[in-house]
Structures are given as C-alpha cells and as structure tokens.
Image (cartoon, rainbow, N blue to C red; front, side, top):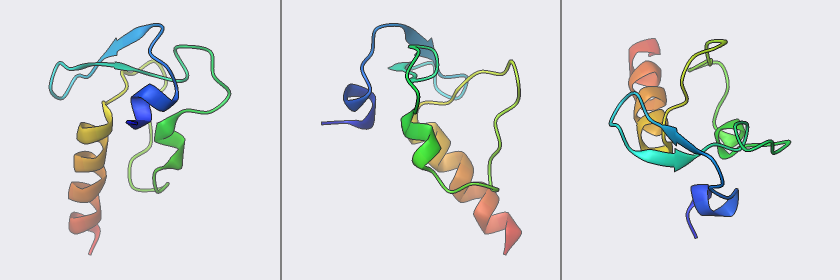
Length: 69
C-alpha cells in the first residue's frame, strides 16, 4: 500500500514538480499527512503553496540535504 493510498485520495492534489495527481491528507481533512513523516528542517512548506507528491518531495529533501553537507 502506498502512502497516498494509506491516507486516502478523496480530493486530488496536483504535484507542481511532475504533474502527478495524488492524495494529500491536509486537503482531505486528515489530522496527519504522509508528508509529516518526512524529516523536518530540510524542506518546509510554504503557506498557500502546493504540495509535492511523495516522490517529488523525497527528491526535494534529498537535494537540499546534499547541498547542506
């Protein structure tokens, strides 16, 4: 089961990185979302911004972590 499936896909978000449709827990009214399980401090969401899909968020975090070293 994917993280998106785990949290449901009632309302669909569109990733600004790749255009993939995915389920966002926050958009769907869940108390928690899969993105909240990611390491903090490397990629902080922007208020009113778009969510990245699991794959693009992981890529963004990895890229920022490699630049921080």
